[in-house]
Every structure is written in C-alpha cells, then in structure tokens.
Image (cartoon, rainbow, N blue to C red):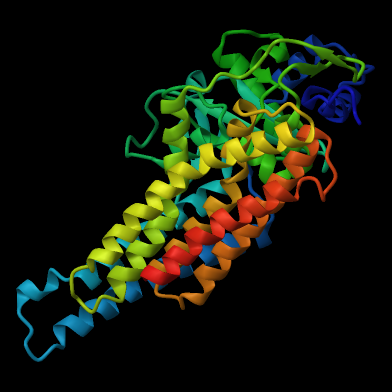
Length: 430
C-alpha cells in the first residue's frame, strides 16, 4: 500500500524540466521556480477528451433526446388521431408521463455532455463548451482546485470551482449539480470536473495555475496555494476506484492510519445529522418512484392512475427512505454478532455512498423509459444496480469487521432481499 500518494505538483515535474531545458538552465525542484516557469509559458489552448469518448457521448445524448421527443410526438399523434378528438383531450395522463420522461431524458443527456466538456484557456477566462457555444469564467472567480488521485490507475480528478456570474449569464444548472455530486464543492459554488484523460492534461493544469496566479496579482506565487490535493470526492472515488473507497469507508471509527501505515486509536466517531442524511437518501429513493410513475402513466391509456399505483409509488418512496437506517442497523447487527462491536453511524454514512451506482443506473433506466425504449432494458439496469450494491455492501462489511465472505453473507442476503422487494413492488404495480 502506498504510504504517501503521488502529488499532482510533482507530476508536473517533467514539464518543469522541459521548460528549464528551453531556457538553457538546470531544472530547479522548488515550487517557486515551477511557478515562474508556468507564468512565462501562459498562453492559450483548447483541451478536449479523446475523440472516441466525445463521439460516443454526443451520440448517446442526441439519441436519448431524439427518442424521448419522438415518444412525446407519437403519444400526441395517437391522441390527435382519436375519432373523438377535442383540444381538451391533450390534457392526457399518457402525455403527462411522456413529458416527464422527456424532461428526465434531457436532464440525463445534459449530465452526459457536461461530464466531458471541452475546455478553452484564454487570458480572458476559463472557457467551458456547451451545446450551443462557450461559457466563460473570469480567472478572478476561479477558486482553489480540488484534486483527487485515483491511485489504482495513476489518474487524477480535478474540480475547478468558481463563484459569481459567467458569460453568458444564462442558467447553467449542471455547473452547480456536478460539483455538488462530488461532495467537495462549497455552498454556492459552481465548477467543471476534469480528469487526467483529457488531452495534454499537464499543460491544462499549468495554464490554469498560471492565470489564477496572475489574477491574484502574484508574479511568483506558491503553487500549493492554488491546489488542494487532499480532496476526496466520494461518489467519483466509488465509481473509479471502488477498492480505495471501501478502504476509506471501512476505516474503523476509533482508528486512524499514521504516516507509517500503523493504526492508532482516536475518538472520531462520525455524527449523524439526520435531516441532512435523509435529504440525501431522498435523492436516492426518487429514481425508483420515477420509474414506476413514468411507466404507469405511459401505459395508462390516458386514464388517471389507479389507487394501487399511487399507493405503490408512495410506498416505493417511503421504503427507499427506510432502506438507509434499516441497512445500517443490519450491518451493525452483523458486527455485534460476529465481533461483538457493531458500527451504526459509520455504516449509515457508508451505505449512503454504496447506493450511488444503483441510483445512477435506475435514473438512467427512468430516462430510457421516458424515451420509449422497451421496459426490459430499464429493468435490467435496475437489477444490475441491485447486484452492484449487494457486492459493495458485502465487501464493506468484510473490511469493516475483518470477516470472511461466509460471515458477511447475512448482510449480503439482507441487502439483496430488501432491494429485490422494491423491484418486485415495482413489477407488481406497473
């Protein structure tokens, strides 16, 4: 296990050496020299992800939008062609379901496009590509970069946060949502998420740092003042480096790792602000309810939802909220049974993160339902999410209590059965 993660600043060392060679001077290791070299090399540039990535993302987003609005058009056409058509018939529950699905599809498509935004660096500001044109952020509004290393793959994830108005001043909800999902954005912050997969990543970071230092009025700044390399983005880490995420989540509440990799006791039991925790759980509980609501409305034939469908939708939402404390209590019970010391608070925070992959898959399934795809595809995505969450929970319990797979099976069965019961409720009510 690496005791000290590689620094992004040290990763820029080759570029620093190259700049020193150009100047016919020996490379110097200190950060001030690096800052001066970056300052001198500050130019412009356009940075984008690999062309295949962009092509797949744009095709997927375009196809999702096209299918969703085609579905809306077909539902509308079926109403208009009715022999007894009157304008008031357009206030139709099937059309309402199709419109909700189209809105969800638009949200998902926008999320995809903004995850792989092209970046333009100019003296006037940081440019972010949008569906129609560019959005520019003045350098004076860009704040300290949040950096997380994906240690298993030698990659970096960087959040470039900013505050204040941008040009144009039109709303950009994804620039608020994506930083919020990382878990490291401050209140009121917007931002763009970058990974080291973007072409010429080192050069991009150099230019951003250089212009940030110029905007701060520092000719030779301390680079560490503009980079926070201790950032942890929980959901991003779980998706890109699940083993590292599980190690972080399972670290015992009364233990911490020293600089030499040794565990030392501390008193850092996490607190549980239930309003904040349950608000986050509500976001996870919404996608299954959306799936049932959209599916039931589209298949209603224009009739209002049946009472059983309304009750089932509400029940799905309530059970989705109950899932978090229930599973945390189950994981605590496994610890009490196997090692005599269960962890409830830590399990609550951990399970809140472990559900994220399933929630994203179910949300994608709901968007596909809105696009009119066969219901089997969203259902398969939901089932895949159930298996992923069960697997992650099992591995978490093993790491938390140092158990074998057989000893952790009680938590595995409980996780699988609870989630499968929600899926069965959806199938029975749709």
